[in-house]
Image (cartoon, rainbow, N blue to C red; front, side, top):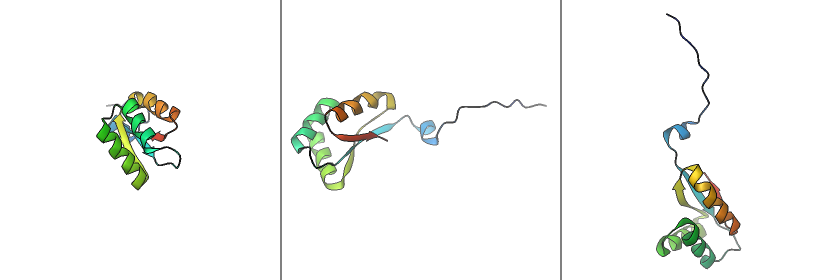
Length: 91
């Protein structure tokens, strides 16, 4: 009996277990609560309460996950948030 070896693409365990990523919003010293809230409503489709809660969490804890999804779904949203001068990254 012989075995045929195949070279497979290297994939992280996180990628295998889930196609879920998150946009993390970080606190900064120049954006107002109003700007952050309005931007989250416009870009991430948050309702007013959710956007306010995210803004407060960012202010008091330094960061908050604001949107989850696939990397493909999140990249254009992340770009729009960056264009609005928010400090974000996909994790």
